[in-house]
Length: 479
Image 1: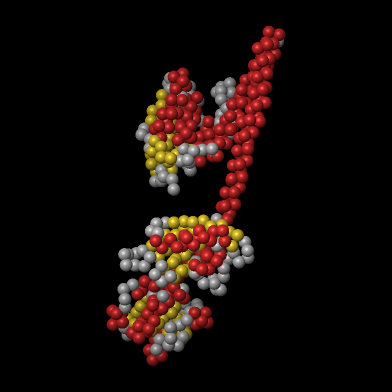
Image 2: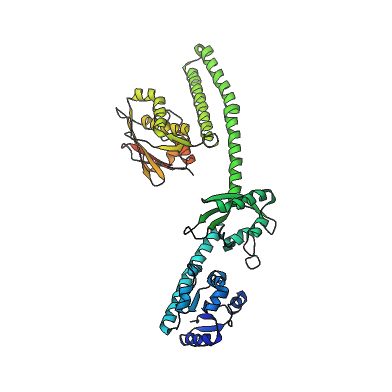
């Protein structure tokens, strides 16, 4: 089993005794002379722990550099000092990550302190490895900036996103700004100028140009942190490469434009000849009906009905395509108002079926009011339509679950077999013939599209002859 290498620094007279004690405990001891070790010593000797014998003169001369040794070298650091030095140290001295042991050293106490420091460092390394792996998978990196000391630290993920070598490039704002695309430079400079005064989470998106000339889109989030009123303000941030996301967004924008083009074709180029066909068929029916036999009249009637159904299908497809592309902005609305709009529109069907709609108290949520009214309309109409009871009944209620509201629309209708629970939400997936239940069969497709646009989910719980419960969720808040 390999031994632990400890880098020992301090006055020669004192460190000789400490080195002997460490050797007795089974550690490999290397020395960096009397001075505080530097990066060259760490790279050359590659220790697992730094043990510094500290005097009052050392603290007076280089106290600030000593306290930051753990962060500087990414190593556990233990200070050997006397009780009177410990009493004189300023508050927060050990916030940098150093630990200490009081002299004169006791063999057992020294071993315990060193093993504790090494164990803590092993846990730190495991966390860092997991964090670095997570950042690599998610194309992210994190950073910390101390406003008082103007000290900036980057994780390996930031170097990776910027295309920089951490061994050749230091972490500083000038390096980051030099990577920013020229067209976004003014925006970034204003952002960093105002950042120290902000006391809330802030984010910004911009472009960078890497060393190989490639352009990337990044998003930066930061949060100001301060442990106490007298503590320094530290900005903690995350940098994320969103190039693939932006590419996807552009593809979606092109898809939306193509959908708008389809909608234009559906609303004009397809419906115009269809209206002409329907018109001529109706003219044929009115002028030549008495000259045709029963079979000819039946053909004309069926053609007219098919044309009307085709026209309705086109209108439904057009409405479906516009749910995402032509929706209104989300605003805080009382959903009871949306429900009333739906039931008012369904008044004739409710009177015809002798149906009733009962509802609990519905919340006020950020929604597209017109679309939510259509959602209620489709779900209630579906419940009334597929119902053979003497008095159809539809119950609507909800409850809040964390950041979402869970709604359900329950009926006493014919029910749905489990194997069809997913199919009913697909386009044109009817479970019954036109003669059994007239309609185009797209109500639940519209419902799913509306719910998904609002960031929710929709599903059904039902069995044949036992009614159905349509469930859907909507966000309680919208960022």
